Amino acid sequence: MQPSKVELTKQAQRYQLSVDGKPFYIKGAGLELGSIESLADYGGNAFRTWRVDNGEKSGLEILDEAHRHGLMVCMGLDVARERHGFDYSDKQAVAEQLESIKQDVMALRDHPALLMWGIGNELNLRHRNPKVWDAVNDISKMIHRLDPNHPTTTMLAGAEPKEIKLVVARCPDLDLLSFQLYGEIDQLPDYLSQSDFSGAYTVSEWGATGHWESPCTDWNRPFEANSTVKAGCYRQRYLDYIAADQQQCLGSFVFLWGQKQERTPTWYGVFLEQGQHTESAQVMSTVWTQRPPEQPVAKLLSLDINGLQAPDSIYLTEHHLYPARVAVDYGHKETLSYHWELLPEIDKALESDGGDFEPRPETVWQQQGDSSLDHVMFPAPAAGEYRLFVQVLDRYGGAATANLPVLVETATT
Image 1 (cartoon, rainbow, N blue to C red):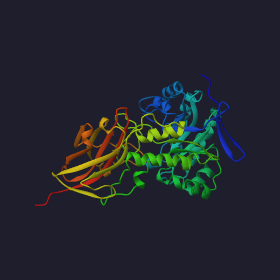
Image 2: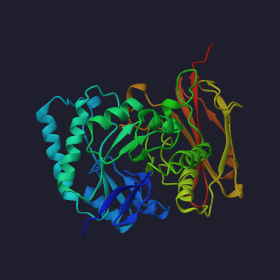
Image 3: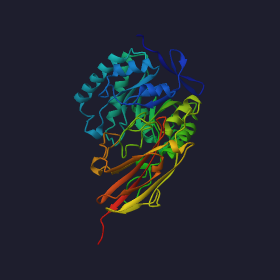
Image 4: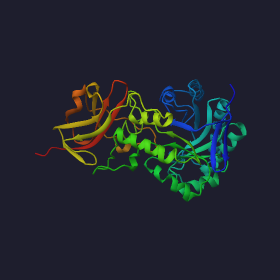
């Protein structure tokens, strides 16, 4: 197989990415263990990984599958993070890391599905040693020596002007930068202006408002937007802050084409644990293809417990029964089904940092049923922090979702 020739050029004030001489605008997603085939079906043309080997597929297998479905890959190179204990003043460790990454680059550089190299993920998150950027620059130089066909970038947490200036100064070999913003994406134009950054970039992670950005209960648990509110955010953020920048932005990778547990099982994925697609997945297909979905998922209007909705802090008494009700807008409500589930909140000590692994809490109560189950009575378990989830499922594989945090208190005599 022959490698694709990927070039980044600037014409007048506009940057252009091209693949084998043809303009290429990234309509992409972050995809670790999700379905590559479905991304192509929804109209995406690229995805990014966080590492070469994700534990299920090798880098070569990922690229081969992408190629079969006509997709390009921003291949993530896993660079050690200072917040995990790596010391960038340790010259031997840095040299060993460079050599390991070199082997991956040599193995994959000629694959036709390769779009670019993503050197590390959020290396600026809680870092102190600026030598990490020297290492990133050295990795980029090594890649350019071995692979003249593919650009290099690094993925930054946020887009703080001082961080941009630091990386630009210490990583002159990078071809472009990549920024990862969620609710704060509306600040991106100002950040770029304040940093005087005039280069090309991608938005390599964006999507639902982050748990760290969301309003919280009285006991400091974040409220997660329901699936319809999220879908509106995906649409607006894409149109207003990604597609709107036609000079420097090369496209984006929406987060996440798949599902993961991060504070909840539903917060960041545009698919659910059992594979159902959400309204946000349909939004992405529409903005990529300009075609509306054939079977729109239900729009979630509200979820309440005992008459209370977010952002109310909802207190329950253990071992009492409470009513919950969900309201949706859908053409044929009689065809919908419902899945209710009560989960403990993730233990604070087990909360992930920067997207690291987080275990899913075990279900303490659930109920499933047909269209009559838009309301339930559920038992408050032993005292503690919980979250009530509802999934509203249609017959076409779509789902609307919502959840509410609750604090269950000990009964007083």
